[in-house]
Image 1: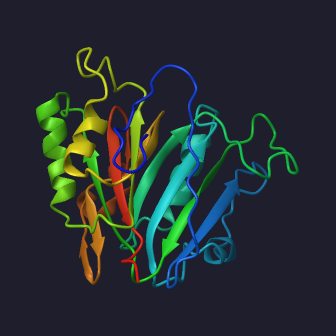
Image 2: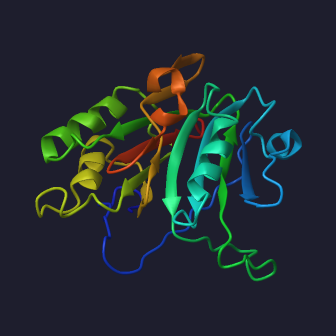
Length: 246
């Protein structure tokens, strides 16, 4: 992680964290969502998805989505079911799977230790532009990592008022790059010298190569089959632009 023009640090051992505060931006709506898997009722109501901007929302541009307690039975299937409700739309999807969830409301509404679910943010508004790139298993040295970031650069997303996200598999990092550390974060900083970068090492990655900018949408992922959105031993890098400053 790294803010401003600082060198982003890939922290693989030890505890770390970040907080990202979004201001109120005219013409842009950012909505959190949280769906808890209920074994007695696996139905996802359309109303729930609509309330958080995931359905019936023509201005939806980006969804950051995360599954938690991913090693529990049924957790991955539930995550895929949630994502499938909006994955066929022309939006950017990026995220990953993590061990557990901590939130500002967890003390008031504590989750069962075995609870599984899906959380995230939806970004709506015609000013939002975004792009994602998938670093596949074949990306395993500095040259191929930089080439992947070049694909992201080619999307021509404005870099002012833009934030970057990197969701990498725990199997990547230092050992994956033959004892070379910080390869992917350094490649990002080389191509995007002023864009802050945040992220984590997780247990599964969500996303593909895609661009959403203005009226132009590049649809990849084999026309977005669910199987093409969920990965392992990969890294997803996303740019989200929140409009030009007025």
